[in-house]
Image (cartoon, rainbow, N blue to C red; front, side):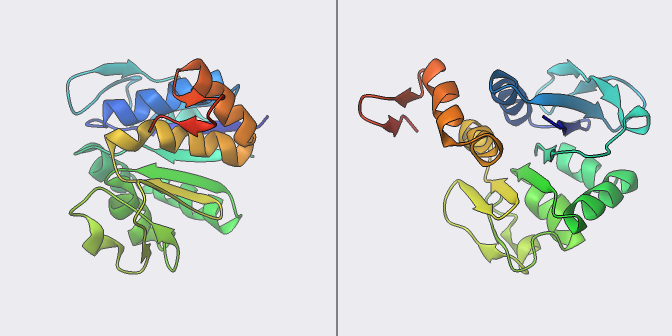
Length: 192
């Protein structure tokens, strides 16, 4: 399996980052957390510090499977202001690579880059005006081809499971969810 990358900037939303990391690793992804700053320790919007696996400028993104952006403020704004990440996202998008963003990041990071143009997407409520070129989604998680977006912390689990389902398959997503007591195989339904 190719490596996937989740980007951490000061002020990231902890639930969105940690939930996605946990679920993807449970599913068997080779997921690397990447700090866009010069420090591996990155502090989230609510004071939780995570030690990233690597620094952006020391990471090889060749053949990346997923590029993933948690939201939060000022985390999403910090991601948007980091030009090397913008260039990586555009190049990955132009190569039909998988991109996932949650909360403010679809509107603050992806929309200005044209990545959401004419695609169904969702973001944190109140940021929709920044996504005028996108088709407004109405579900907490939207998938349009190789782009997955979600509206915020409450959707973090469904967001991560959508990434798993897209890459590995729905059965793997159900197995991970079942292990987390989020899926009932007998009734074939998720608890969210």
